[in-house]
Image (cartoon, one colour):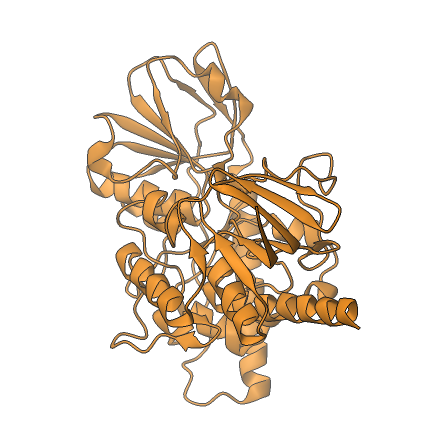
Amino acid sequence: MTRISTVIIGAGQAGLAMSRCLTDRAIPHVVLERGEIANSWKTERWNSLRLLTPNWQSRLPGQRYAGPDPDGFMSMPELIRYLETYAADSRAPVEERTRVTSVMRDATGYRVETDRGVWTCDNVVIASGACNIASVPGFAADLPPGIAQITPLSYRSPDRIAPGGVLVVGASATGVQLAAELRLAGHDVILSAGEHIRAPRHYRGRDLQWWMGASGLHDTPITEVDDIDRVRRVPSLQLAGAPGAQFTDLNALQDAGVEIAGRLSGVRDGIASFSGALANLCALSDLKMNRLLATFDAWAESARVPDLPVPERFAPTRVPASPRLALDLRSGRIATVLWATGFQPDHSWLHLPVFDRKRRLIHDGGLVARGLYALGLPFLRRRNSALIDGVGADAAFLADHIAQSRARRAA
């Protein structure tokens, strides 16, 4: 059994940023990682994936991108090297291949059990990620047995998908990217679109992320949000990590030959049923996009940003005249269903009363309980909390909180 001030669980960007902030404050700690540094990026992402944020936005405490392509988008191998270099330069005390099996209270703080021993500590920082488990609807069990079912966590490339059609369920960033990739590889693809948010990759000559940062939207704090639970569940923008195409939206997919259907509402006797509200969802998505662009325009005018092209507006999302409402999954057209229906964190090892009735972690800006913290979750403290560029500010706040708690205990 080993005693230390703070245990960080997870050695992705959040855990490494937290480690750097604790090191800067001379707080003893260890980072426990079930696999290797950047494990999720190494083992649970598809081959062609690139970050949705430009390289210049890859900023962590004490480090920022200094390579030759600031406007490019990191591939997975590039991001893994970036995080490994960050860990080495920060001298992060990472214990790799150490799986946490239990976290519970003890007489002096917390007891963290792993498959390689036990740690006791005053503080635990949960930095194990928000995308550990793919969210798949219960009716997935009703699909015909001959249809393969996969999630983005297991998908790697089109050449590993069985010949035949693919039904991609979900139209956020992951769903539209994979639908486009599968269609380009020659698969017959149907995309089932529920709630989604359309957005241009670049607008008025600047990347969307530049607009989000410069206008202050990325820095929106939780105190300025009316319904934080709803905002934390908002789908990711329909973007891809590529500077060329302006849109990776339903129009671009239809131009590539992807059929668009409404939200998949269930499967019964081999028949998939789709919602008839596709047109409404697309209109709402366009409305949200245009409101966002209007916000950018108003900010640019008030800030007198020079040398910007004139404001742009885009043709609405095209909706099929008669979107399909049903699909016979026994007909042979669909060989694979890809569930791009979201993710959730894995806190099965956390044996404490810190969850709501839906097993969601309850926290106030990353403060869970005395000595217990969370980091790297969507909109933890600001809109950009889940981005590499945003996790550092949250880590600094939590590190300050830990330092102040240590000082009070020592007084």
